Length: 107
Image (cartoon, rainbow, N blue to C red; front, side):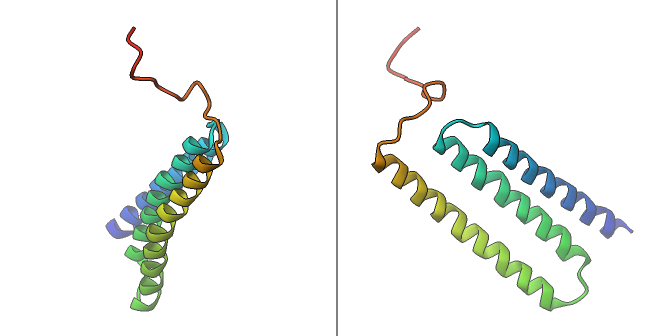
């Protein structure tokens, strides 16, 4: 009973983070902000969903598969985001002026 309740909480929290990530992808204006929204909450959301599923799975086979999925997500998401950011920077893409903070200017 307690385990199912805890697993449900993990699933709800993880899916909520995935929804927040989708909202961020829709609302942010430049590629760097969207890249952040695509990787950070979505990866943590997947981790919470996997932890919730692991709590209720009866055998080690599906748990091993979910662990592999989580490991690949934590490996490929930062690498992919880094490569997209690097390619965008080298292409000379302009940032949205509302997201740039210039520390050299004093108020």
